[in-house]
Length: 142
Image (cartoon, rainbow, N blue to C red; front, top):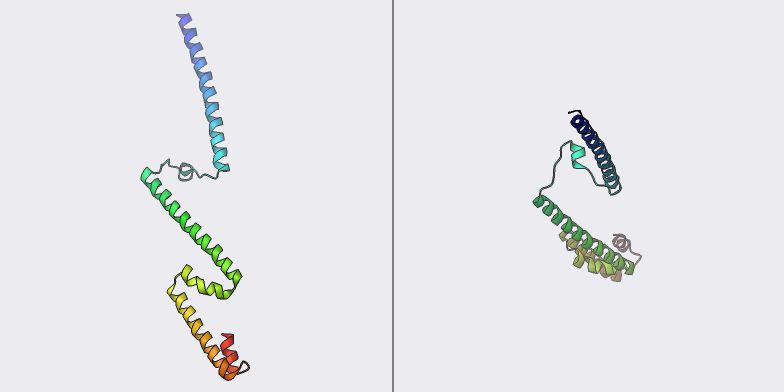
């Protein structure tokens, strides 16, 4: 009987040692995961809210789809910006001629039409009155 008791106590002691060993392994793995989370800037939803939650697969697919759409739109706008900057480097007239094709906007279209009308008015009056006329200077300043 005493032998069985000693064996049981020995087994319990061995199990306690194994438990402590496994707890240390878990702590090390958790510390490594925390280190990676900080390095990779991944937020921990469970830590922030105090409640463990997971994203549903459908929600995750929708979010990924939205991310792809936004990324695609961003790339398109970034490419457009690069092209418009190239056109601007060639001169404001070249940019004006192509900007409505690149970015169709009703208000911008009206402004470009007003600019054309003003430039035509200036050219017509400049031939009649000459460049030193106050009205010509006023139109040129616009």
